[in-house]
Length: 612
Image: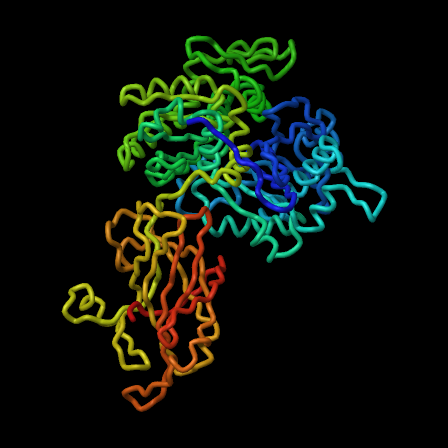
């Protein structure tokens, strides 16, 4: 596949910025859309206090706060040598790995108990959304400075009548943002990120956030990155085979499977994506657990956090061959304890022991790849490894060894694998190469269903029968499927289910609100939410004003002579985009009407009935 980029056909200049906020490191990419010109993907390659500059430049996802909750240092500035003394003197509080505090409570693998206990708490006066907002504010400031210093005409001017291009684009609302997130994150996490973006000042209002901020999964961003680097040519996708993209990052490993869709230059997801907490920080957690046990009776036991940090910053990155002994340099020449392998400030470890720290991540990726290959709708022949953890030579060699027996070829881009998500997020906006995606779970609504005495499962729940205003017997707790798991969904395909609501009060139809739920278990056709109940979760809430239905609402006379109102409506879900979209529609005088549905990620109880 030879990649070609079309010129921007819009009438206005626009700036698109992609933030890849990772668990351990973060990066920024952008593109300037100029009418008639072919856009280029560029990266922010200079940050304050950053020693390393270049195409793969990223900064630590770290903030330091003072006692008043004000940000005092961020990114590379937060790890400068003099910062340690200042932090202690000023009693600053650090916020590393804050991204993990945004993770879903369900739908992803749980973090093992030991690593979970080592994840630092957030500062006492900060929420995860506020910390993310502070960090995105810092990223935006750095991005602005870089673009103004790099591109002619973008810098601010003293002449208010002739502002710099950056100021002009910002004022006119011509700066859009694309935010990447792990495959396992859902609408609730996207909503948190959108709130953080408003708090950070990326956009001024919630309305602007809805129109100017988009999301992309890290897996799909990585695919777009790979396509730009000739993945189709290397993996056999042009012949119809699929490819599995493994984005191995600091916190999560995101896995997505794609294949070319027919003759078009579009790709389709051919297996439900996966996300696992087995990123590079968990290798460090495993090393630290070993160090705590190994040095328990050594005078260096208090130095374990420092030794683990040195392992994380150096030994882990260079490790490639388990046959060679490894050294963690953490102290000076006088630091010695030969009984525990410490000489001249270095701790000696056998290479096989260091390899064991990687093994849970290796096993997880290998087994998950095998599972996705078996579930794929098309044969998969290649695995593409990207992400910061993907640059590990040891991880790469172990995956090649583990997947070779099933005929999979593991590949890596030549350069900048740790900028795959940021660059790929921009490519996602420019290229839009994925035309269909796979549903990860079964989606539907918790509702009442008309009681049917001929069905055994209904008779078993007969004590729960309630009577609607129209005299209809109904049962609660029915899961009405709208979209089954592992269904391939195009961006324009709609999934619809019919419902109705009855009430003796007309005012109850001005804001009809329904919860949308998902089932994450193994029951093939889930129906009752009291079966395998732990695997049901409320996803979000969709609301609409049905008072516009007018006379079709009634009133009608019930069996007891009381008047009631009834609304027949459909809930329509579009799962093909990287964000869940929903609408409510109804018919009035034979004409279909639609109301944009408001999605709220603060679920409450709802009462609707499936049917027409």
